[in-house]
Length: 129
Image 1 (cartoon, one colour):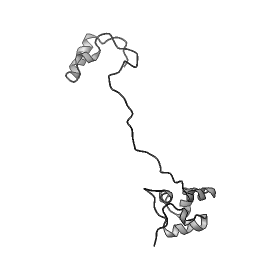
Image 2 (cartoon, rainbow, N blue to C red; image 1 turned 30 degrees about the horizontal axis):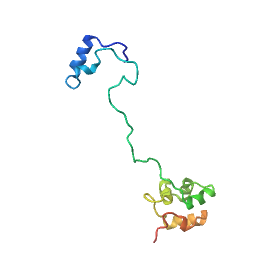
Image 3 (tube, helix red, strand yellow; image 1 turned 135 degrees about the vertical axis):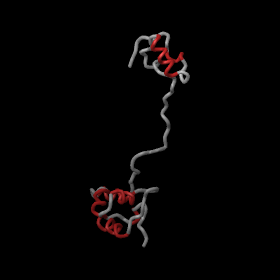
Image 4 (tube, rainbow, N blue to C red; image 1 turned 180 degrees about the vertical axis):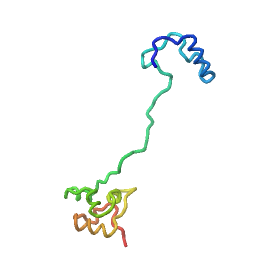
């Protein structure tokens, strides 16, 4: 609720009774009314954006292997469907670093033969038997 005028004496006493001793009576702006200026109509609480290191979203899959797939007009999702594996599994084969996994030999054979990807282009290699 927005007010232009100061609270009445009765309203001030009710506010003080409800919030005292947590909030002092002088904090209720009993003198002078409330301002309509948004810069002065707030309690002194600085709002600051907190820096965060949490980077959301999927990790990039840019690699030579994905370049070969994309050049042939095939997405990771389409390759995953054809190989009979979940998208997240196929995606992990093309991710570098944390979250990346080596390709199982039977799927690697399909990737190498059907899509023309070189074994050296797979960022995490092929699982050794």
